Image (cartoon, rainbow, N blue to C red; front, side, top):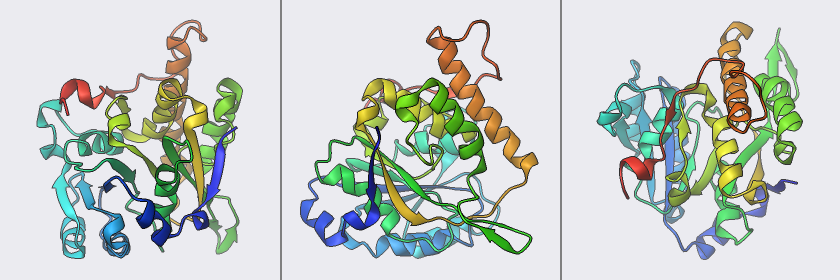
Length: 282
């Protein structure tokens, strides 16, 4: 059963007192000029708790780079990191390449498109890692309201998580079934652990990361923290379909690899970046 915490369990002053490792916060970003500056400013407000704020930009055509830099972040282009890896390949690739520029012991990944961002996203994810909870990998959960036709549906968001990822994990990996938002982009772990696992690219990174870490550290070392409410722009079913297909591809590929699925995987192959330490030794 997944251990669940609430962000209110971890006050910033408490974490700063317990802090014995340095902390990098990484924001993969693509055309988020309207949100990234506010997020960086709120993270900077945590003071000495965070040692590095790194925005990895995927080639934004808006003012994302300028806004993030003005707010106080270190900003690097995704393609400039590990250029020998070839063309950039979306969010998972940005998370993987960021490890080339991360300078700290602990890494917190934060989505750069969250509206009304709270610094509790960072403190909540750090909490289990800094308080000897036994957790080695921490994943976010939150309320996801969905607005349609001017009406708000409580927890109606996160449709790919609830309609694709959760049923598949419950059926085939029941020790991960308690994760409420398995596709949440906000996660935290040690840099050393992240360097040991491959990263799937694009939309499939979160599901693939869960399955890899289940093998490496075991489901009992994975925790989730309720971070309150997360609001971001909703997408059409047409736009969500590739995300659902990516999640299906990851899980069926793993089932095939483990000998639990006969014949080829049920979806197209997923591009995977190798464990970072094998390509660029720390």
